[in-house]
Image 1 (cartoon, rainbow, N blue to C red):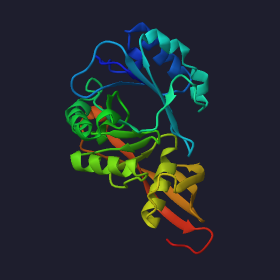
Image 2: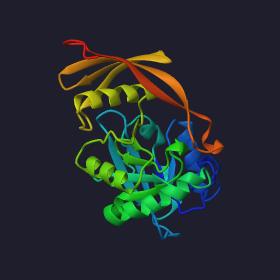
Image 3: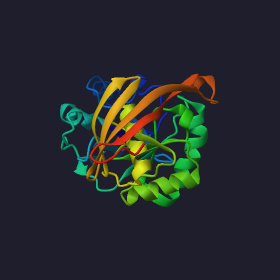
Length: 270
């Protein structure tokens, strides 16, 4: 759930106090497992209505976005949060056919996001215009600048201008770019890692070219991944790595190392 709010943004969205109608729906959405994000336009920000609201669903192949402009934030009370939580279009707005591109610029949450994200958002908006929004924390401060491509929920991190432009161009033609790809919302981290390894092996970059059939395990995970007519068994293991970001980003980061990748319906590849 994306709600336009020019700011100031609190450190955490659930601590938003005003406008009360927005604060209330943010907390209600979180209680139902919906992720609320505050958004605003890069650069000069409008401080009056109408306010843009999006409802989006990113899991699987049936992804979608609905959008609506509100004359009054109180209209948010009409958003069916139960439907949204279930992945069903709530009918609150009209279908949105174009992508929504989010760049994290949440400086109160992490200074790196403001320092690297705000310039990137301005640059992207100069080319992709109305597709681009600044947003509150999307996770992974150490990966700033971060970009999220909706409705598929693709996360890219550690982006400069060139990498971001490449990622958006690919998304607009229905593909992913493996360089700087953090993963996809809605999938467990080890499943995202397994998908990445299969894409790297096969060269399949289409948004819906890879499907995660199952994921099991703890610390060492086993995934079954389908790509076109092939099925793969992928074993990945979680490891901790230190990073050079400041203490506000945490001391360690978790990554996943592939231990085995087998083509199930033919011969072992690795």
